Image (cartoon, rainbow over all chains, first blue to last red; front, side):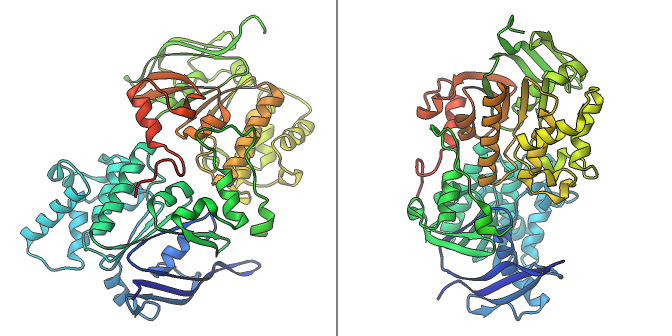
Length: 275
Length: 254
C-alpha cells in the first residue's frame, strides 16, 4: 500500500477577481521513495506540501483527499492532526534562522519535539537527543545542545532542524527548499544527510525545490508543476528527455558550467501562466 | 579617458568593520569593458570588496583606483556618477512607497541632470519594461520586473562601471535567464565594465571573462572563466568549490 495518496487536491485563495486555485486538481501517490516537486515561484509546490499537513489557514481553502498510510487526513480534527504532524509526517522549512526558536537552546527544542509525541524517562530522552545530533553529524553534541539559534551557522542550523524533525521517527519527510538559504558547499552535505537518514530509516521523502539539477540528483521521481498543475511526471533519470515544453524551457534556461551560448533561451510566460 | 586602460584596480586592500579585518591583501585589476567575477561562499568577503569600492565600507587601507580616480572612504558624488551598484534583493533595495518614476528620478535630481521625463522613458525601454510600469509601486511588480527597475536605476546616470552584488540569486531560473541576457546585452551595447559578486559558477561562465575565487577574506586564485569548462583550478579551495557546484547530469550520486 502506498504511504501517501493525494487525490484531486486543490487549494484556493480569494482575490478581487474571484477565488484562484493555486493548486489545481493535483493527484499523486508516494511509496517509500524520494519524490521531487519542482516549479517556479507561484507554481503551488509549497502549497502542496502545506496542504498535505493541513497547514493552510483561512481564507485559503483546501479540497480533495489526502490519505496517509490508509488514514484520511482531511477529516481529522486539529487535535488528531497534531498527533500526525511531527510524529508521522514532518516538514523541514527553508530558513533555519526563522524556524528555530531564538530564546530556547537547541537541546531543549529537540527534546520538546520528542516529548510531545513520546513519554520517555529523562535520561533516555537526553540520550536520544545526543544520538540524533550525532546522526546529523554534529561533532560536539553536548556543546551544541546548549547553544542558541543565533550562535549557529546556516548549515549547522539546518542540521539542528533536521534533527528536530527526525527525532520522533516520522514515516514521511517533506523538505521545502531545505537548502536554498545555504551556501553551495554546505548544500551538498545537508542533502546527502537527508538522503542517508531517509534511506536508513525507510522513510518517504518529498523534496520541494525550484532547482531542477538538485532534485534530479536526490530524487527517484519528479513532478514538474506550473500554475498549480503537474505538467510532467517522470523518473529523475529521464529528466533530460523531458517532453513538456515548460520542463524543456526550464532546463534550457539554466546556465551551464561550460556555457558557450551567447544568449539563454527565455520562456514565453504568457503561454503557460496566463499573466 | 583613454589614458588608463583599467577600470578598477585594487592593490593590497585590507577592509575591516569596527576594527575586525574581514578582507586581507586583495589585489586585482579589471580592464575597461571587461566582466570580472568575485566568487566564494558567504562570509568570504566578496560583497565587502564591492562596498569598499563604492565607499560604503569606509575602513579600508591599501590602494583602490576607480577609472583613474583614487577610491573614496565615503560615498562620493562624482564617483557615483561613473560607478553604480545593483543589489541582490530587489524586494529589499527598492523603496516600498515610491513609484518606479520616483525611484528613477531621484538620482537625476541628486546629480542635477535635466530632461528627466525623456531619460526615465529611455532607461525603462532599455531594461525592457513597458511604459505602463512607470507609475507602479514595487509590490505591484514581480521579482524579475523589480530587478529590472534596480538595474534601470543604476543605468540612468550613464555609469561606466557596474558593481553587481548577486544580481540574480533571488530570482527563479527562467527569470534569471532573462536578467542575465539583459545584463549581457547592456554591456555589449554600452561598453560597460562589470564587477560581479556571485556564488553561482555557471552564471560566471555565462557572463564573465575572468574570476577571482575568495576564501576567508583572501583571493586564493584568479582564473579565466573558461577554466570552468574543465575545472583546471590550481588552488585546492577553488577545486573544492568547483566540485561542490557540479551541474545536471555530471555528478549524480545514487
